[in-house]
Image (cartoon, rainbow, N blue to C red; front, top):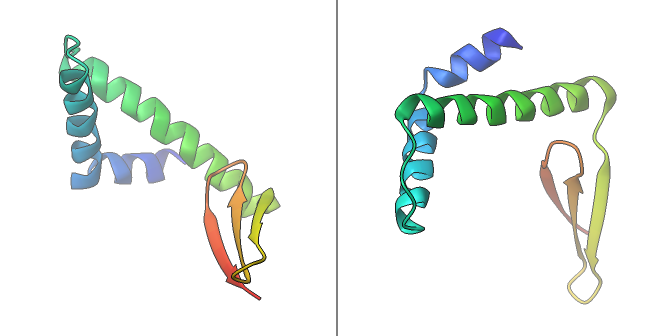
Length: 89
């Protein structure tokens, strides 16, 4: 897991997430915490998501179905990692 986390932290997407978090603080007119505080919080969130994803990879997803009978579709959402799949039937 540490390798996956380190790989993600080195991406531009991770930096964009930190900037989006800072923008959220600005939009709410709150003081923006220092970069290291934002980074630590984002690392914790990513770590939690990766842990959940790895559990799902090993044990399978915990699907919750939201069916829409009128158009013959279902959306399956994993209660553990948040992955979504759309089905037509």
